[in-house]
Length: 322
Image (cartoon, rainbow, N blue to C red):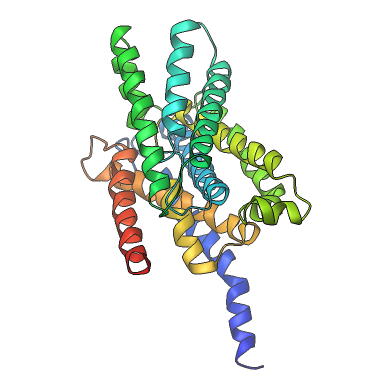
C-alpha cells in the first residue's frame, strides 16, 4: 500500500510535469532567432508578427501530424506507417498542385479542402491495396505505402516540370516554418478540430484497431469508423502540407515512443502524443535555427534524420521476433 501510493502520485504528476517542460521549450522557441527582439523599439511588434505565429504553427503542426500517425497506425494495425509512409502526404501534394494549376485564384481554404480530399482518396487507395495483399510480415505495409507514394510523387514532379512549377513543388516538399508569419498560419487552427475529433472517437478507433471481426462483435460500424478515421488523417495531412509542407516521420516517431512506454490506449495516450509531437518539432526547429545561424536548416531535414534513425531502431527491435 505505502509503496504503491508514491507510484500513483508520480503517475498523476507525470502529465502536468511534461506539460510544464514542453511549455518551457515553447517559450524558448519564442526568443530564438536572428533578429534581436531587444535591439530596437520594433522588438515587441516583431514578436507578434513572426515569433508567436511561427511557434503556434509548430505546436499545431506537431499535434496534427503526431495524432494523424497514431490514427493511421491503429487503422492499419501497423507500427511502421504514418502519413509519409502511406503516400497520404504525396497525394496531398498532388491535390495541392492540381488546385494551383486548375484554380490559380483559389484561396488557401479551397486549396486545403482539395488537398485533403485528394489525400483522403489516396489513403483509401492504399487501404484497398492492403486488403488485396497477403501480408506475411508487418514490413510489407510501409513498403507498399512508400512505393505508392513514390509513384504519386513521380507523377506530381512530372506535372510540375511540365507546367514550370517545380520550384513551387520543392517548397512544399521542404517542410520549413521560415515563411510563417501573422496572417499565414491561421488555417492551421483547423487541425485543432481534428485533434478534438480524434479524442471524441478515441474508443471507437481503439476498437477498430482490434480488427473488423472483433469491432463488429462489439457493435461498431467498422467501415464507417475506418472512413472517418481516414478522413481525419487526410484533413490533418492536407492542411499541414498546404501551410507548412512535409514533416516526415513525426507521426512514426512519437506514437511508437509513447506506445512503448504506455501501451495502446488511445484516449490515455493522446495527450502524451500531442506533447511529444510538440516537443520534438519545436526542438528540431530550434536546432535548425541555431546550427547555421543566420541561415536555417529546414525542419523536415532534421525530422528526416531523427525519424530514419528511429525507424531503423524499430526494425532492429522487430527482427528477433520475425
